[in-house]
Every structure is written in C-alpha cells, then in structure tokens.
Image (cartoon, rainbow, N blue to C red; front, side, top):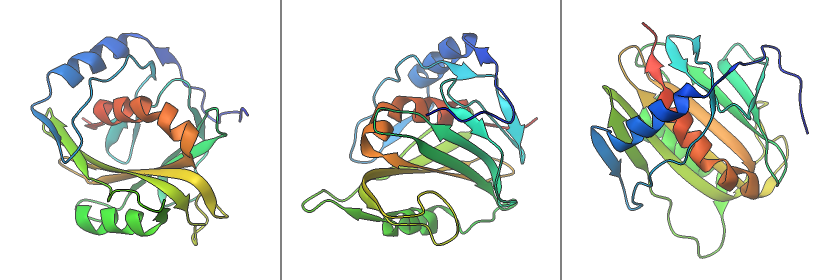
Length: 199
C-alpha cells in the first residue's frame, strides 16, 4: 500500500554513513536487559524540522499530513505485514508527563502474549541527546483519541520513544503489524539516532 505524501522527501544516502558512525561512537551504550546491536545501513530522507526537533525519516517511509494539531509529524511505515504508522508529539519544554509516565502509558496500550517477558526499556545517548524507547508486542488496543489503530490490532507491535535534549522532550509512537515493525526496527532506531534539537 502506498499513500501519496503531502511533502515528498528527498533521499540522502550520505546520512547512512553518518548514522553508522553515530551508532559506533555513542557516548553511552544502550541500557537495559537487551544488548545494543550495531545498526544496519538504513537510507534516510533529508532531515526535517518541526517543533524544535530535526529528524530524518527512513526513506522508505511515507510522510503524511498531520491529522491533529497535537501531532508534529506523521508517517506511514511499510512492511510485509501491512502498513503501520508513526506519530510524533511535542508539548513544550518539559511537557508531556515525562519519561516514566509515558513508558507506563504505552505499556498499558498493549496486551502482551501469554508468557511473554516483561518489556525492557532501553536507552542510549550521543551528542547530548538521550533516546529512550520500549518495544511491545501483542494486541495493541484500539486508540481512544483517534490514533492508529482504530480497532484492536492482534499480533501487533508498539515502539514508543522519548527524545530528551534542551528544549524537549519529544515523544514518538510507532504502531503496526508485528511482522512490519520487526522488519522496520533498525530503521526506527536509525531515525532516533538522527534526532537533534533544531539550531
């Protein structure tokens, strides 16, 4: 499925090398129960700036027009399991409830598979920017505020991330079929590594 983009993004292959260098030279390795993996080469689009943040979407993702004033950025995530979506939010400096509250809120939106281990929050830092994320798989509950999904998504996945830096934080919520999100995991992490406060 391909959705026309409101603002077509130009590809920037040079960013691939930059992200690989960032991944190898991060100031702080990933924390949590899961070891950090060296990021695969991911082609990113030209960085875009919104709400004080500069970030580069994966080139294969399709940027969408924001459907709510609360969302600073939206995009469709393609994959073999069907499309997913990502939304980014900004509530002003220090706004949005903070890291712990949002991690718990994202956890409450997913019914884990029986016997699944408790999800581990991971984080890494480089260039004065701290990125913290959680990966959840199971049944993603239907959104009550008009976000994706609008009905329960079985065998789905939710990746939630918080970017902390001067002027932030910024919040990202990516949801889609489990197969799609597993395929796009490295692209998601490469996108997080590209994030910087807007100069």
